[in-house]
Length: 447
Image 1 (cartoon, rainbow, N blue to C red):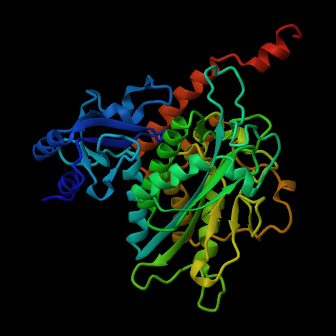
Image 2 (spheres, rainbow, N blue to C red; image 1 turned 135 degrees about the vertical axis):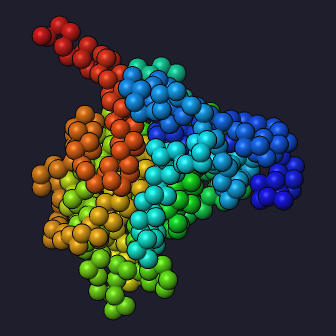
Image 3 (cartoon, helix red, strand yellow; image 1 turned 135 degrees about the horizontal axis):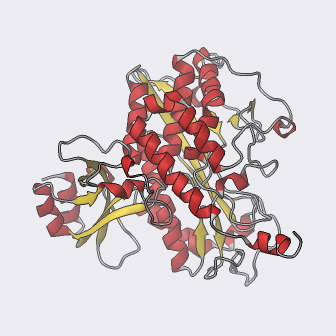
């Protein structure tokens, strides 16, 4: 009996959600009666159109048909049995399983998010290295918003009031939403989502959740499922949870900080530090790779037009690729730690990024630095905001740099680079057609 079938039998599952993360990180797939799923899988029968991997966040498709095979053929969903979990918010016993996708000949769909992350992790393992990551996700709780032209507002908490000021690390401020977070923790525990610390961040009703460190693919799966879980929990409490990078004008943005280190695959020794605590050559090279290549990978860290509103001076969001020790104004922070926990915290990625692609890109930058023995700049002391803005300022600029970077086509594959470009250009074009309230307010009678 397979692990999938054993889980279905043991938990008396009646339906299974077979899901795949698309380029944006949206869960797509099929809901299938459990018994039917087991019959279908014996015949390799669960199918989807290939084009779901190039669906935009608006649900449209790019006009460039070259990014998929001309016939938009079916692909086959192959459940990763290690990912099967209950869906705890349904009354009916329901399971979910994350699927990989292959073509009819068994070849992987080469622009799927999970495949891209596996491909990057494979580069490390080919050299006897084992990457370790720990993401941190920030998000806002907001009132239900039915009119997209109306600004978002913090929700009313247990006290009957909304937050009006900054409550960073406030215990009582978090407790305002105790019923929500009790459900989040319960739902995560039942799904084996290994979340650690919960803290109130600097924004009104802004929260950060830390994940325990581990295998990159497992942590990306957990972050993907956590976002879905948190949004669902909030709705059940008649509010929203949003992972937009910059959801409110006067509040800080939300990040997905990625802590990363590299271990020796055989000994599991952290390769970023000597036993004495001194930094290693590979540690510096990894940082140098992040510094050199991250600006050209920005569509994977800041994938939406809204993403670039977060990357401004202040509010702990970086504007350049400098690094520093325990310095939250830099793009890359090295926390104070012992040799076993030596790591780099990539602070550039937004909470709106697809966790598979952001982790893949962050590791790929470091890998390029390590294999090419690059040298980093000196660490910054004091505020990095006094230094020049070195990250792309909008999605169009980011896409140009992404396409011009030859290593990305070699590491991720040309089809993936073409797919990202087509999807994000389609989204950018759709955004450019929208006339904002700012334009109507300030230009209508003044120009």
